[in-house]
Length: 207
Image (spheres, rainbow, N blue to C red):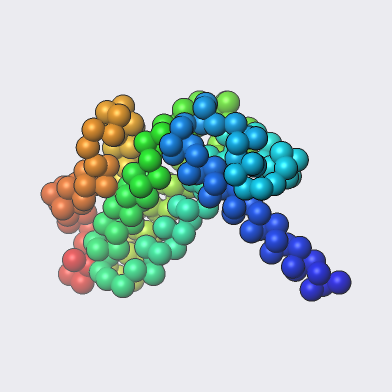
């Protein structure tokens, strides 16, 4: 019985993953407004009812894509082999690069559906900004724990400022219609401005 339940759970995870990956491809090309649930399920070879087993509405797919991937990015950055500044830049650039590779339309849909928290039905998505801010805070806390940052570094203020940078860059990239590379813009920030911002709080082994 236990093995059957495990197999059932694995199958459910695979179905959910297939729905997300298929939806990502279609939304990236057409945008959410022009994408129907039926189109997603037909491409997956499942029924509309299967879609509603995992998601209440198609907007939830956009949120789920965002939530799952950025947790992986954070975990990869925490285990990145390098000093603090390299890890922090890796996190920020990977964050931006993933959004850019997923495409402008998908990013615009996510922004459109989260800019007003009162309109967000899924509690996880309502907290997306806080979660990203907590991830940035976790990166800085790890630097303090490893002795790369001074113990009196203003962790909350630094996390707030760097999250503002990433979200501000994302919004400007959206508003430009993808006129430039979001990832390259973040690389420029990390090369030219991030070192000066963090320098007062670095110990000698962090650079």
